[in-house]
Image 1 (cartoon, one colour):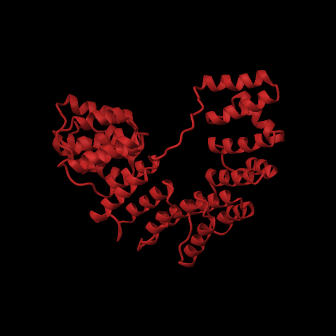
Image 2 (cartoon, rainbow, N blue to C red; image 1 turned 60 degrees about the vertical axis):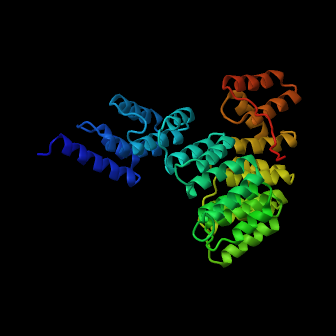
Image 3 (cartoon, rainbow, N blue to C red; image 1 turned 135 degrees about the horizontal axis):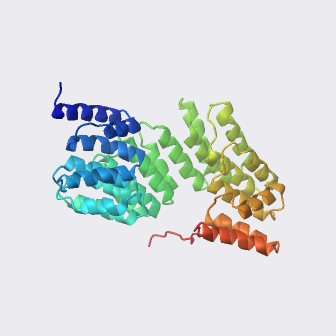
Length: 393
């Protein structure tokens, strides 16, 4: 009969195998059923499952258990990194930063996890600063994942100069080109979001092996910069090369149609997704077509698409619908129905949409209803975000 140490080894192997195979919930359940005291390896095995499930409470409990058992930062770097990963993926940025700052030794995983957390928590400038500190440290050189995390941050700031510097760094380190498609895809996205459609296409064109993300990203870059003809040509080229499109590619095409006012083409692509390629359109696809119809002044089509959407309306769909419905005085049956939904509190949308609905009710001199919508907005602590523009000086 196995002793206590044998039981721990058996449980740890089972938990680790479940976590590695993507069965996170089962790994956590196995950890909860343990009839032996877990060791550091057991904790490090279950923490990735907590990160996958975004279970911050369990992650904190495991971290606390480790500290109560005498664990200190640096005593087990693998466990420290696993805890850091949980905090990062669960959005606990303060806890992640506190743990990171207290680590006596950091490796590439530590730096990359922290940069990733900052980039996705609305702190892109801090993510870039983290990358600079890593380059100057002696804790190891950035890898593909590090560069991609920082490129994500740069894309949100619109800093073209920083994007070019990172591109140069990636080339010098051998992290761009050849089989490094993940970095090059991120570079395409950066150039597209920084207003350089030409550089986005050049980065795409130099890729020896283009995957689905490459095609979708460059098409979207072309679309948002008004180069809709090039986006359509890229789609035709992709089909000729035998690449089957996915939902992201179609979203890029629909963006192109929306910006070019090509409503008929947008409707054609939306129908072809399911009919030809077996791809069920999502909220983003319907919202994009709805927006295309509104931009073209086809307000009847806007209401029709909104009513027939087979998926639940989200904030973007509601915002796109109402922005165009209000432009047509919002007098349609669907427009009046949506007003009632907001008055009754049956929908949840962004602050901009609430403000539009409230203003339209005020324009119709329905003051009580306008105040009711504003009151609903205050009760749910929804505020209208202040518009801002990034410029590089």
